[in-house]
Image (cartoon, rainbow, N blue to C red; front, side, top):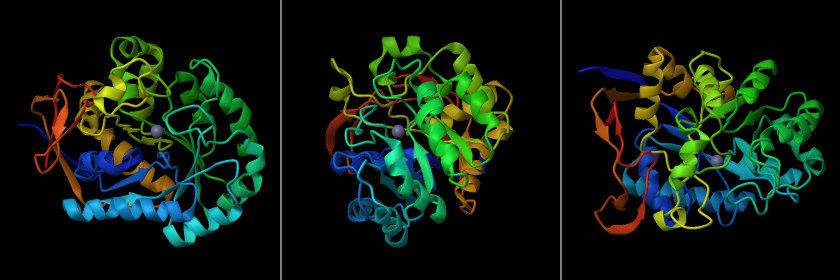
Length: 346
Ligand SMILES: [Zn+2]
């Protein structure tokens, strides 16, 4: 049997949610990844050092209880129009926050308190630049058609930030178009992008037929998908892995006004192996998942290993029980019911 052993991966963009959902989905990330950059768009967003502290204490407690001693949750802060320089400084000093997340107001789940006017945050970006805190951007322009929302944001608010803060490190989260790939390649190394597994697999037709494939920003055309696959298998360190795994309960996805978010954590590594193998680039997988992101964030490389086996694996239709076997509200994973070529050996 074919096995693949790689350096333990990092997920540089994941939503672990809070409360019961956090408890339920944490194992899918903590069993596979050594580190994950956890996003701050909760029902009460992580807008202050205190909120960051409270949330990550809860997360670390679950990790300990569930026995994930080697997993490390990397901290983020949520930017609002009211974020102050002090929020940046203290969140780094006290909570070791690595990145601050910019959600343009009203663009995705949990962005209601997001930023309306980036130019008002000038002093905040200056402080981040000084302290080496990464600016992580959900690069969509509010109230724009989703086909153009990213491009609009990049030529508008992003460009202003980029020009005014020449040493600020910036990540375009979940790059979804061929145009963004081309554009990103032209920026210096301090601007990088995460790419999800599901954007390497879906086109917009797949979103129309299945609400579990619906996320923000949504999957685009076949040409866009191919450009993303080329980018992640190119060996260019500007592209690294962030799953954007974003769980919702089944009932929140299978209704009118379905929530945006693809719960991909259980399948991302087998799926990536399958995609990289299909284009003859399996040897590039480790750099994409376990090197480029860590180097961008200035973190040491992980020392653990992850083993994958080439053996068909049918993705469960839903997860309905927690680790103790207790019944829970069902959560439907990405590619539910489909069979993948690879599986993780735990
Ligand atoms: Zn996200």
